[in-house]
Figure 1 (cartoon, rainbow, N blue to C red):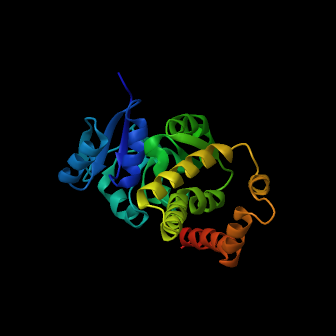
Figure 2 (cartoon, rainbow, N blue to C red):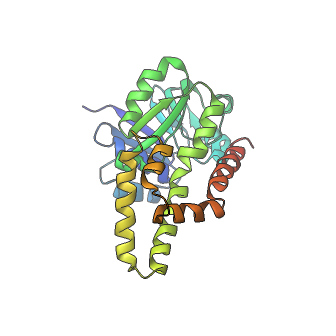
Figure 3 (cartoon, rainbow, N blue to C red):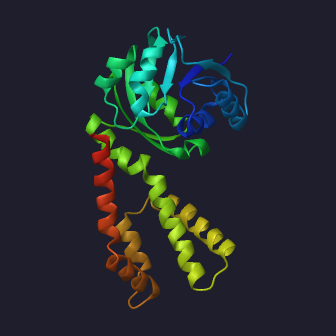
Length: 252
C-alpha cells in the first residue's frame, strides 16, 4: 500500500510535482472547487482523493503546500490540525510566515520548477534539518535537488531555477524566430532548436560554459559573429538583471 501525500493547492506547480510522484504515492489534493479538482485528476491521469479547504484536517499528514503566496493567510485560516511534515513551494514565503499561518511539526521551503512533470526539476530547499534526508529523497523523484544553507539562497535560486524555464523559453522562441527570418520553415526551426536544448542540457553538466563557448567559437566564424551580436544586445547584462529583479520580488 502506497503512502499518501497531500497537495494543498491545485495549480500548475502542484500538477507538475504530482506527475513526478504519482507512481510512488497515493495523491490527495485539497482545493476550493470540486470541479477544478476533477480537472486536476483528469490531467494527472490517476485517481486522487479530492477535498475542499474548509476545515480540512492536516493531522499527521505529509503536505506539499502549493497555493499562491498571497493566499497563505486565507488558506491557513481554513485548515485545522497539525501536519507532520510541510513542504512549501510558495516563492518568497519565509519559514516564519509559514509558521504563523500553517501548523506543522516540521517545515521545509522547497523551490521546484515545471520540469518536475518530466522528472527533470532543479529543486532547491532549506529549513528543518531533521527533514533534510527525507526532503531530498522525496524531491529526487522529480529531478535533482540542492539543500541550501539559508532562505536568502533559496530566494536567489527561485529567481534562477524557479523562473528559469520562462527565460529559456524566451531564448528558444527567439532562436526559432531568427531561423524563420532567414528562411527556415517554422517546424524545422523548432525541431532543430529542440535538439540544441536537449544536447546542451547534457553537455553543460560536464563542461564549464566558458570552455564550451571557446570550443565552438573559431576565428572569424559563424559563432563569433552570432556571439558578438548577443553581446551588442546586452544579453549577458539582461540575464544578470533578470535574476536581480526576480529575486527582489521575493523580498516584498
